[in-house]
Length: 204
Image 1 (cartoon, rainbow, N blue to C red):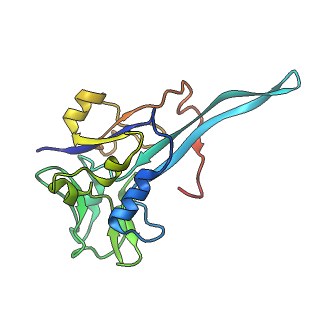
Image 2: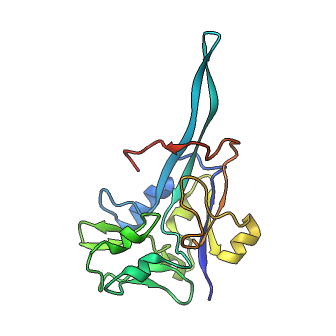
């Protein structure tokens, strides 16, 4: 089965959140629902030496995430209404709004927090990789609007051949959990991941 996937270049992302805005605009999302999220992650500390404060291991970078259209999606397994579907022809995971009862089990099961309750419709909503645009021969909105060209999409094996096989960086969970359809180029910082934290907690 073909598996469509995401690619993200963390070494080039500037955190502009154009991908977020393109997603919200394309899908007419209400306030609070973010199907693609850009998080700032960083770490390090300051020490006093000879009367001066000096940075030690300071780093920061951005991570753009959405539904990872996992090869083993837990959201599909836990949905009591069979509303969470993995499309056979391309592996895209989407919500069947006609079946969804808004129970939230999918959100609890997803290590990426991708499914979210839309308060306007009362059903769960998540990134479906803009499958309607793809079916029309167009790229997903986030990919088409990224000014730094940090995002790409395509068949998983083709993306791995082009960009490598790294599927997780901090603060994302290990790829061993759900086998995400995701490839990432890590940030250039030599300190990345060492004792960091999400720096925009209130927003994230």
